[in-house]
Amino acid sequence: MHFVVTGGTGFVGRPLVRRLIDGGADVTVLTRDTMRTEGLVPARAQLQAWNPAKPLDHAVIEGADAIINLAGEGIAEGRWTPARKRAIRHSRVLATRALVNSMQQTPADKRPRALVSASAIGFYGDRDDEELTEASSVGDTFLAETSREWEAESRRAEDLGIRTVIFRNGIILSKDGGALATMMTPFKMGVGGVVGSGKQWMSWISLDDVVAAVNFALENEKLRGAVNVTSPNPVTNEEFTKTLGSVLYRPTFLPLPEFAVHMLMGEMGDALLLDSTRVIPKRLLDAGFEFKYADLKAALENAVE
Image (cartoon, rainbow, N blue to C red; front, side):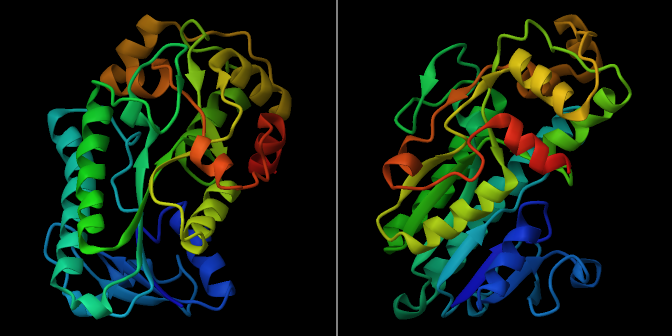
């Protein structure tokens, strides 16, 4: 099998590429800088330079069995200035557009059979206690609009006869990156606590289960369309806080009020810490996917060990 991966040096991409290669696959990683990428992926991975803002030569993807598209600027790497929001949007929408354009230019008999493309549960926006499945409507926030446009570019591959799976990823738990790495700092200093009311829902998933879900999607020919990639057991911020404090053996009595989130982080803080998104992975469950870490405490213990 031959897979082409964008975002292969990210904290999801790195373990995924390792797993694919360990399984005997040939993997091409598309990256902006092949020199800086060396050492981030296994030596057996092929590196191909690509600027996502520019067209991709279709020869790079000819004959690939599947494309795995994980490219995108981190959403928690600084306040959301107008320039930062453009970078977040363009790194997803324009990169995916270029990728599908390349598939369109590839001879039909040499096109990949599948595209697994990332999205996020930010698609749903701030929805209070509403239980959300893949059939739920799009929200009205910046992340929701970005996700809608991002997914629309991915869906163009369906018109080419390519099975397309869109992963709406939840909060991915790994100490090596993402939200958890940032959350752990105040807890380790003994100043962790509930954010805002603590009643907002957090839809999480272990990094191990994300990687397993990608492999599941590659192997399951019947899976297509939007797929929520979250644990079947979302929790409130209050429950998440208490569980993380317990796992780290740290107190959780210092709350972070809403006004402080607004002051310190602006719109980004609202979206990442205060918005409530209660997501159920209905399509994964219906397809028979088995979660390794469906329980939050077990997932956190694995992530921080």
